[in-house]
Image (cartoon, rainbow, N blue to C red; front, side, top):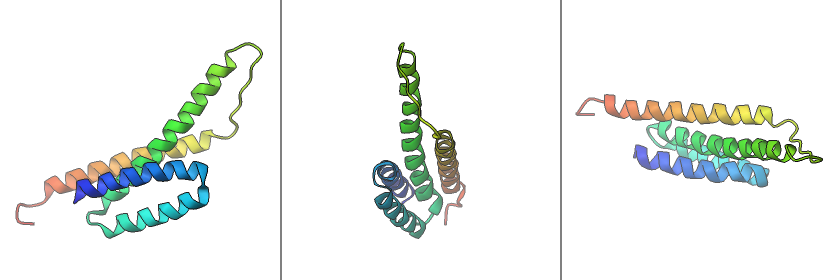
Length: 118
């Protein structure tokens, strides 16, 4: 079940990452439901890791792209683009992504370490 819960976590996380940008109330509601579902599954690390990878990856992509697009626009003469205050959100997104990767590694290692009869 580890692979299934991880895949569901990534898909729900990616959807939730998008919804948190566009419809924050709906995104928070989906996040609460996704965390509840991930905590019901055993082992928990796979589902939560997938959820963190989905949300963190989505936010890292969109916020990173915003920064790159703004920098490209600023290179054109007489043009200006500012994205005030996204640095803390980008840092949070990277932390979520790295935490999700770490939990995924824990889930994979935990599955390999179990004795044959367990």
